[in-house]
Structures are given as structure tokens and as C-alpha cells.
Length: 180
Ligand SMILES: CC(C)(COP(=O)(O)OP(=O)(O)OC[C@H]1O[C@@H](n2cnc3c(N)ncnc32)[C@H](O)[C@@H]1OP(=O)(O)O)[C@@H](O)C(=O)NCCC(=O)NCCS
Image (cartoon, rainbow, N blue to C red):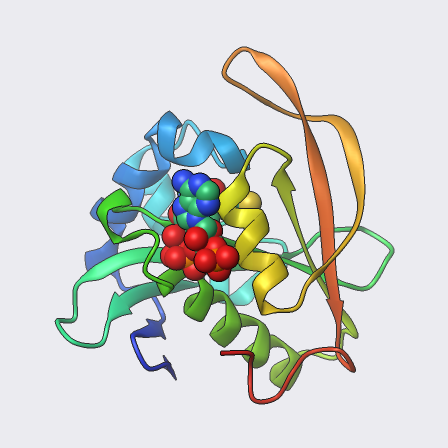
């Protein structure tokens, strides 16, 4: 359990599978970060349960819940993004659009990255985001990630290829405590 001031990150349970699966199957929610998977609820639930033991898993590793009410509003994950290079990429989703723009995503990613630097040996944590995904780019910049470059035509959604920015932060750059 990772506790912030507004949200907590907790491992997903079998009871979370239906809601998270619904988000994963909504192309409008997941297309900007390419997580559309033609799972069934059963394969999704199995993937969710197995994520903790698989460093390459793209399934959610934490549910994001509001501390005040216990409502599940999003999920976050991480994975080994490269077969040779040693870094981890993070991803994040607030499944309920009404909860966006309140700093919840920012706090969730700060909790995740802080925990990864505490529990993993990597010295770099990265993220990629569609160049058009302004909220995601702002979030990363605000918490201390640097924009390191871009990849052209690396993401396909809404019937065309999209360029993505590559972001990263190193262990020595990561602020402790995290930026307000
Ligand atoms: C990306 C996401 C997690 C951000 O979560 P959030 O809780 O809304 O983030 P924050 O409230 O911390 O806002 C992040 C920044 O984006 C800005 N922002 C939010 N919505 C915006 C919009 N529609 N247009 C421009 N800027 C916007 C905020 O003002 C904030 O910038 P600031 O820190 O300079 O004020 C959320 O928008 C989301 O789930 N998007 C869909 C999934 C996704 O794209 N995931 C990332 C894939 S790379």
C-alpha cells in the first residue's frame, strides 16, 4: 500500500477486475497509450493476478483509490521496456474522466516512481506519451521527468500513426520528498 495525501495505491484484487477490464476495453480511454487488448474478462483477471510476478506485465500493478472515500478512480503500472537496456517504464490511467485535473494522476505517479526507486535496482525510470497528450506530458514534466527525445510514428490509434515523446528521470534527479 502506497499512501499519498489524496490517493493510495493498492494491489488490485479479483474484485477490481470488472472495472479495470471495462476501462481497458474502452478505446477512447486507452488508445492514447496503446493498451487496447482483446482480452476476455477471464484472461484479464488472470493477467491481473499474475502481474506481480512478471516484470514485463502490462496489466495494472496498483489500483488508485481516493483516500477520502475508497473509490477506485484509476490504475498504474510499470514494465521492463527494453530487452537489453536496464530501465523501467511507467504508465497511468484515471479511468473516470471526472477525476482528472485535480492532481490525482500526478500524486499516483509520484508514489509509483518513488516506490520503484526504493524497490528496484534501475537508475532510470521512463515513460512515453503521445506528443498530443498534453495532460500526460504536463504531469511528467511537473514531477521532474525530462523530455529526452521523440519517436516518430510509434503509436497507432484513431486510424493513424502518432509520434511519441520519450521521458525519463534518473535516481539522482528524483526529488525526495517528491515535488509539490
Ligand atoms: C494523464 C492523466 C493520468 C493525468 O492525470 P490528472 O490527475 O488529470 O493529472 P493532473 O491533474 O496532475 O494534471 C496534469 C497536468 O495536465 C494539465 N491538464 C489536465 N488536463 C488538461 C487538458 N485537457 N489540456 C491541457 N492541460 C491539461 C493540468 O493542468 C496539469 O498541469 P499543471 O501541473 O501544469 O497544472 C489523465 O489525464 C488520464 O488518465 N488520461 C488518459 C490516460 C493517459 O493518457 N495516460 C497517460 C498515457 S502516456
